[in-house]
Amino acid sequence: MFEELISHYWQEFLLIVSAHALAVASPGPDFAIVMRQSLSFGRKFAVITSIGIGLAILVHVAYAVLGIGFLIKNTPWLFKTIQILGALYLAYIGFQAIRSTKKEAQDYSRGSQEVMTNGKAFRQGFMTNVLNPKATVFFLSLFTTIVSATTPVSILTFYGLWMAFATACWFAFLSFILGSKSVRQFFANFGHWIDRILGVFLIGLALLLVFATFG
Image (cartoon, rainbow, N blue to C red; front, side):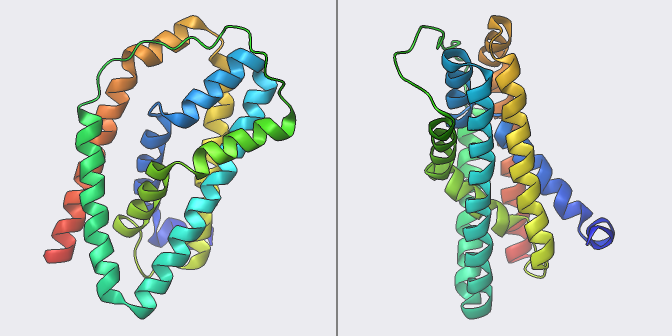
Protein backbone atom coordinates (compact mmCIF):
# COMPACT_ATOMS: atom_id res chain seq x y z
CA MET A 1 0.00 0.00 0.00
CA PHE A 2 2.79 2.42 0.86
CA GLU A 3 4.47 1.89 -2.51
CA GLU A 4 1.15 2.61 -4.21
CA LEU A 5 0.68 5.71 -2.04
CA ILE A 6 4.12 7.06 -2.88
CA SER A 7 3.93 6.30 -6.59
CA HIS A 8 0.33 7.27 -7.40
CA TYR A 9 -1.28 9.24 -4.60
CA TRP A 10 1.46 11.33 -2.99
CA GLN A 11 0.13 14.60 -4.43
CA GLU A 12 -3.37 13.84 -3.16
CA PHE A 13 -1.95 12.85 0.22
CA LEU A 14 0.08 16.07 0.50
CA LEU A 15 -3.04 18.13 -0.21
CA ILE A 16 -4.94 16.19 2.47
CA VAL A 17 -2.09 16.67 4.95
CA SER A 18 -1.81 20.39 4.22
CA ALA A 19 -5.52 21.16 4.46
CA HIS A 20 -5.93 19.06 7.60
CA ALA A 21 -2.84 20.54 9.29
CA LEU A 22 -4.01 24.10 8.74
CA ALA A 23 -7.52 23.26 9.94
CA VAL A 24 -6.23 21.55 13.10
CA ALA A 25 -3.82 24.39 13.90
CA SER A 26 -6.59 26.97 13.58
CA PRO A 27 -8.02 27.67 17.07
CA GLY A 28 -11.56 26.32 17.47
CA PRO A 29 -13.71 24.16 19.78
CA ASP A 30 -11.11 21.37 19.96
CA PHE A 31 -8.39 23.84 20.87
CA ALA A 32 -10.61 25.41 23.52
CA ILE A 33 -11.52 22.12 25.22
CA VAL A 34 -7.87 20.97 25.31
CA MET A 35 -6.80 24.30 26.77
CA ARG A 36 -9.52 24.08 29.41
CA GLN A 37 -8.55 20.53 30.35
CA SER A 38 -4.86 21.40 30.53
CA LEU A 39 -5.32 24.46 32.71
CA SER A 40 -8.18 23.24 34.89
CA PHE A 41 -7.41 19.54 35.34
CA GLY A 42 -3.82 18.99 34.24
CA ARG A 43 -1.91 17.54 31.31
CA LYS A 44 -2.99 13.93 31.85
CA PHE A 45 -6.67 14.67 31.25
CA ALA A 46 -5.82 17.04 28.41
CA VAL A 47 -3.92 14.24 26.65
CA ILE A 48 -6.85 11.84 27.13
CA THR A 49 -9.16 14.50 25.69
CA SER A 50 -6.76 14.83 22.74
CA ILE A 51 -7.04 11.08 22.07
CA GLY A 52 -10.82 11.42 22.07
CA ILE A 53 -10.60 14.23 19.51
CA GLY A 54 -8.29 12.15 17.32
CA LEU A 55 -10.58 9.11 17.32
CA ALA A 56 -13.57 11.32 16.48
CA ILE A 57 -11.82 12.15 13.21
CA LEU A 58 -12.34 8.53 12.16
CA VAL A 59 -16.10 9.01 12.46
CA HIS A 60 -16.01 11.95 10.05
CA VAL A 61 -13.76 10.07 7.63
CA ALA A 62 -15.97 6.96 7.76
CA TYR A 63 -19.23 8.64 6.82
CA ALA A 64 -17.48 10.86 4.29
CA VAL A 65 -15.89 7.90 2.51
CA LEU A 66 -18.95 5.62 2.73
CA GLY A 67 -21.33 8.35 1.64
CA ILE A 68 -19.18 9.43 -1.27
CA GLY A 69 -18.70 5.84 -2.42
CA PHE A 70 -22.46 5.28 -2.43
CA LEU A 71 -23.11 8.47 -4.38
CA ILE A 72 -20.46 7.71 -6.99
CA LYS A 73 -21.92 4.27 -7.59
CA ASN A 74 -25.61 5.15 -7.62
CA THR A 75 -26.08 8.84 -8.42
CA PRO A 76 -23.06 10.41 -10.14
CA TRP A 77 -25.00 13.60 -10.91
CA LEU A 78 -25.73 14.06 -7.21
CA PHE A 79 -22.08 13.49 -6.42
CA LYS A 80 -21.11 16.24 -8.86
CA THR A 81 -23.69 18.53 -7.27
CA ILE A 82 -22.23 17.84 -3.83
CA GLN A 83 -18.76 18.53 -5.24
CA ILE A 84 -19.92 21.97 -6.34
CA LEU A 85 -21.64 22.63 -3.01
CA GLY A 86 -18.51 21.44 -1.24
CA ALA A 87 -16.41 23.87 -3.26
CA LEU A 88 -18.79 26.71 -2.39
CA TYR A 89 -18.61 25.79 1.29
CA LEU A 90 -14.80 25.66 1.23
CA ALA A 91 -14.77 29.07 -0.43
CA TYR A 92 -17.22 30.38 2.18
CA ILE A 93 -15.21 29.21 5.19
CA GLY A 94 -12.08 30.38 3.38
CA PHE A 95 -13.44 33.93 3.13
CA GLN A 96 -14.61 33.74 6.75
CA ALA A 97 -11.13 32.64 7.81
CA ILE A 98 -9.45 35.44 5.85
CA ARG A 99 -11.61 37.94 7.76
CA SER A 100 -10.44 36.49 11.10
CA THR A 101 -9.30 39.09 13.63
CA LYS A 102 -7.00 39.02 16.63
CA LYS A 103 -8.56 37.48 19.74
CA GLU A 104 -7.82 37.93 23.40
CA ALA A 105 -6.24 35.00 25.22
CA GLN A 106 -8.86 33.16 27.26
CA ASP A 107 -8.18 32.41 30.92
CA TYR A 108 -9.21 28.94 32.04
CA SER A 109 -6.82 28.83 34.97
CA ARG A 110 -9.35 29.50 37.72
CA GLY A 111 -10.13 26.55 39.92
CA SER A 112 -12.94 24.29 38.76
CA GLN A 113 -15.38 22.46 41.01
CA GLU A 114 -15.97 19.85 38.31
CA VAL A 115 -14.60 16.37 39.01
CA MET A 116 -12.73 14.93 36.02
CA THR A 117 -12.19 11.24 35.20
CA ASN A 118 -10.38 9.47 32.36
CA GLY A 119 -13.66 8.45 30.74
CA LYS A 120 -15.18 11.88 31.06
CA ALA A 121 -12.08 13.55 29.61
CA PHE A 122 -12.17 11.16 26.64
CA ARG A 123 -15.90 11.68 26.04
CA GLN A 124 -15.57 15.45 26.17
CA GLY A 125 -12.87 15.42 23.50
CA PHE A 126 -14.68 12.88 21.33
CA MET A 127 -18.07 14.58 21.49
CA THR A 128 -16.65 18.09 21.04
CA ASN A 129 -15.22 17.06 17.69
CA VAL A 130 -17.80 14.57 16.42
CA LEU A 131 -20.72 16.96 17.07
CA ASN A 132 -19.01 19.98 15.54
CA PRO A 133 -21.07 20.77 12.40
CA LYS A 134 -18.17 22.65 10.84
CA ALA A 135 -16.00 19.53 11.12
CA THR A 136 -18.74 17.46 9.51
CA VAL A 137 -19.07 19.67 6.46
CA PHE A 138 -15.31 20.29 6.29
CA PHE A 139 -14.50 16.60 5.94
CA LEU A 140 -17.27 16.02 3.42
CA SER A 141 -15.98 18.97 1.40
CA LEU A 142 -12.37 17.84 1.75
CA PHE A 143 -13.06 14.36 0.44
CA THR A 144 -15.20 15.57 -2.45
CA THR A 145 -12.72 18.22 -3.59
CA ILE A 146 -9.34 16.53 -3.11
CA VAL A 147 -9.86 12.77 -3.17
CA SER A 148 -10.26 11.10 -6.56
CA ALA A 149 -13.21 8.82 -7.18
CA THR A 150 -10.73 6.07 -8.13
CA THR A 151 -8.71 6.22 -4.91
CA PRO A 152 -8.76 2.71 -3.33
CA VAL A 153 -10.37 2.10 0.04
CA SER A 154 -7.00 1.05 1.46
CA ILE A 155 -5.55 4.47 0.64
CA LEU A 156 -8.62 6.24 2.01
CA THR A 157 -8.25 4.24 5.22
CA PHE A 158 -4.63 5.36 5.47
CA TYR A 159 -5.72 8.99 5.01
CA GLY A 160 -8.19 8.61 7.86
CA LEU A 161 -5.73 6.91 10.19
CA TRP A 162 -3.13 9.55 9.44
CA MET A 163 -5.49 12.43 10.21
CA ALA A 164 -6.67 10.78 13.43
CA PHE A 165 -3.08 10.15 14.54
CA ALA A 166 -1.87 13.63 13.56
CA THR A 167 -4.82 15.29 15.31
CA ALA A 168 -4.28 13.38 18.55
CA CYS A 169 -0.54 14.12 18.48
CA TRP A 170 -1.08 17.83 17.84
CA PHE A 171 -3.49 18.30 20.70
CA ALA A 172 -1.42 16.08 23.00
CA PHE A 173 1.52 18.36 22.22
CA LEU A 174 -0.62 21.39 23.01
CA SER A 175 -1.61 19.74 26.30
CA PHE A 176 1.99 20.02 27.45
CA ILE A 177 2.61 23.60 26.38
CA LEU A 178 -0.70 25.39 26.99
CA GLY A 179 0.09 25.84 30.66
CA SER A 180 2.42 28.64 29.60
CA LYS A 181 0.83 32.07 29.48
CA SER A 182 3.22 33.11 26.71
CA VAL A 183 2.03 30.22 24.52
CA ARG A 184 -1.62 31.12 25.08
CA GLN A 185 -0.81 34.71 24.21
CA PHE A 186 0.97 33.58 21.04
CA PHE A 187 -2.19 31.86 19.79
CA ALA A 188 -4.20 34.94 20.74
CA ASN A 189 -1.79 37.16 18.79
CA PHE A 190 -1.19 34.98 15.73
CA GLY A 191 -4.11 32.54 15.57
CA HIS A 192 -5.90 34.82 13.13
CA TRP A 193 -2.93 34.58 10.74
CA ILE A 194 -3.23 30.79 10.81
CA ASP A 195 -6.91 31.28 9.97
CA ARG A 196 -6.03 33.55 7.06
CA ILE A 197 -3.50 31.12 5.60
CA LEU A 198 -6.10 28.37 5.88
CA GLY A 199 -8.60 30.65 4.13
CA VAL A 200 -6.36 31.24 1.12
CA PHE A 201 -5.64 27.51 0.86
CA LEU A 202 -9.34 26.57 0.99
CA ILE A 203 -10.33 29.15 -1.61
CA GLY A 204 -7.60 27.77 -3.87
CA LEU A 205 -8.99 24.25 -3.47
CA ALA A 206 -12.49 25.49 -4.24
CA LEU A 207 -11.32 27.17 -7.45
CA LEU A 208 -9.45 24.05 -8.55
CA LEU A 209 -12.59 21.97 -8.10
CA VAL A 210 -14.76 24.42 -10.04
CA PHE A 211 -12.28 24.45 -12.94
CA ALA A 212 -12.05 20.64 -12.89
CA THR A 213 -15.85 20.28 -12.86
CA PHE A 214 -16.62 22.71 -15.67
CA GLY A 215 -13.32 22.58 -17.54
